[in-house]
Image (cartoon, helix red, strand yellow):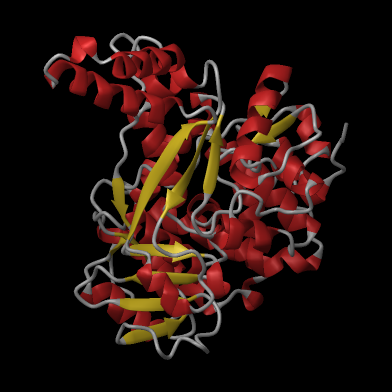
Length: 448
């Protein structure tokens, strides 16, 4: 994993907690939420305040995400909004946290200047012991406050001020006035520095979850379904008519078509379809020859063509079908018919323009794991698990490719590939060098 970390492709843009003041605030919030504290004097946190080093120290990688639901969070700075969400259990969690920070940035900036903000992504489910429980998760609401209750105090002060202004003879209510003075000493001047946080409810009808081997829940569709990344055993009693696993490609294709969720890349407006499909072919080539010990360092287009000629007998049907589609896109001629049962079919699609485009592109990445670029952009959890099993030659190629061709212009690459899906990835920047040897299971954690 060091290749990815060094290039900012993993643990990129984590927020560094190193000052005694920030560590003390973090510990107050951690104690408030979990009853635990850390002895570390510096560590790195994601958008939710989760630190891999602290998780290793506490021997609890889910110390802010017990049972994988109702994720808790600790905010020390609004700069955390650019950090990724590590070990996400739901595809919507980072988007919700990022939206919360953006909508309350001024208030959070003022609050985190003196204290940590601790909170929780709240829903009505406290465990997902059975897959059916996932269907009870219909909406997510954020509850947040400082460790000293500044937001609640401000709300209480506002209520008492209203009472003071409306109540007859309020000037003679010494208890009310004393309460207002006491609360104001905690909140400061709320007229100049309002501390009320916007609390929105986010619908969660269509989402991916890591639970039960990975499930895609499409509830808010004309034709709802659940798609399992692994086996669908144990999913028989779900409150939807259709349940598929990834091996049922024809049925998934019909589901996507019936709900108007995808479009062919070659028909997408403003897209260089030939270039996108040619790159997918190269990824399939690399996937095919990766186990043969071929050195791919500095491989050019000419080198790739040579490798294609030498290994043509090994290339799968998906490669040859995409080659025909590229030829049609460049030169016209006979349209290559690629049906839904063909291994190349899902490589030819991208999400259509709709609110669940991110989720659909994530599903397509799951269906086309050889497309390492889409896998990295749309489904990082699966990318990291898959990457760990690759031979070193493929790891080197993928890490160098993503650094050179994707990191240099992430927004441009996403626009070219997906057109209308700007929110797929975290804001990524290279991590501090010392993090490479300290994070999680890939290195020793330095303790106090």
